[in-house]
Image (cartoon, rainbow over all chains, first blue to last red; front, side):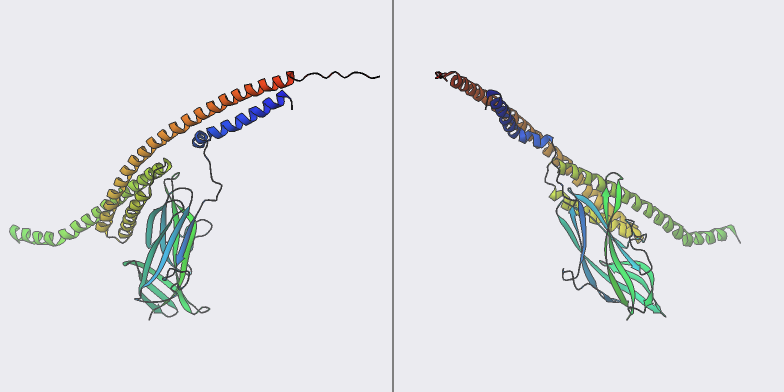
Length: 197
Length: 169
């Protein structure tokens, strides 16, 4: 190895050591982005806090409960909104990133830090339901102790033998750019076979 | 009918009819007040969230603020629910509660952000100074080592005695 080659070796070694010494300052100036995917979770658990035992056969005047939860993996704290909606089989669900046009009966607003979760108990009760021939009318539903008029008809489903309604939850996220909540393309729900006994 | 009788009949009519108009006017007024309170609460909630986000970006621990802002969010959700049900008194009450909590959180988030920013600047100065001193020391030592190495290298080369090989042929 001649002197020029030794000089090159020294310069590379010096540059490497200098970069190591400059690393603390560089880490402040050069942002290091994690390559992980950013997303939010939305889940629904049964009354025993497990993914089982969801209310299905629902009678008038009885209390039922589910847990709704949200997980934040968006890289920073996020401001969420969960709309609780009640529908019959013919009314629209969210589709192709567009939320259901139904009015919400209840809502939750909360903030979740990155990597953290939020969960809340939701108790509901069908306050009044009446059968008229092959259709059922549900007038009011109570959610967490507050009565809401839903005024919803459902036709008899002969295939599954019941009057079916769905309680579903839409996840919305506050968007800084548009200064408003945007549908976050996630929803979960449970089917309810309502009996007017 | 005398004037006094007519006046008496009109007075009785007024007593019975006036509450209807007054209550409707107050109802409409209550709706406007509730809508305005909800608007204000929503604005504070968003600005508090933005302040918390800024504090978080500055490196502050915002978990306590998030917990309190969740309480404000609960109040705001309740305000929306009661407004939807036409209970404007409760809607206004919850919106005002949200406003108060949101405003407190916003102010604390701004303070926390300023504190965190001060710490960040101190940290930056320490890091920059440390890095600059480190780089200068490494370059200086490297230069010294290089000089010493070069001297030894030249000495070794110059110290080599040429061998005289006698030609036999």
